[in-house]
Image (cartoon, rainbow, N blue to C red; front, side, top):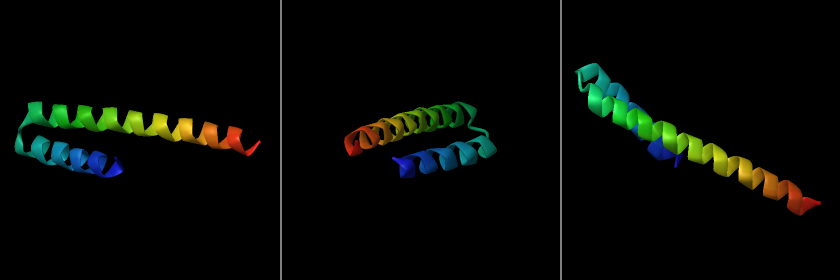
Length: 54
């Protein structure tokens, strides 16, 4: 999932430099959404791991 985030951020940066603002916005929004999902999954897995050790 982190790989997709990096790819989308690079695509957004390149397309923003080349003047494709709509595509850059879309790629950036997708990367931001995937990053939020990634953080949520990390937090959930840390909570479950802490509860399982007790």
